[in-house]
Image (cartoon, rainbow, N blue to C red):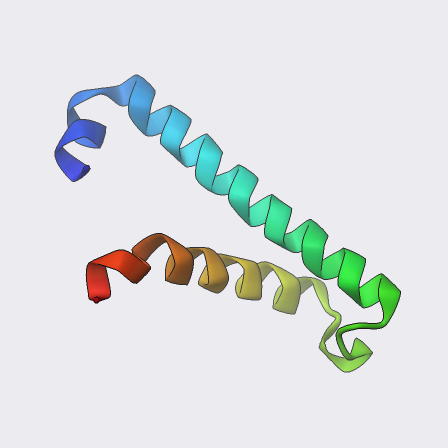
Length: 67
């Protein structure tokens, strides 16, 4: 995958946009669940939501390379 991203800049751009979209989707899911009261409100900060979303994405994106 890394070689493809290096060789084709337009694929790199599309991949980065897709990553951003995935992180935004996770942030929206967290915001939705905060609003519903499913997730404890003491965790509800912009920093927590963004960092958790990034960590969640990294975990999901790399889970099959660790196994």
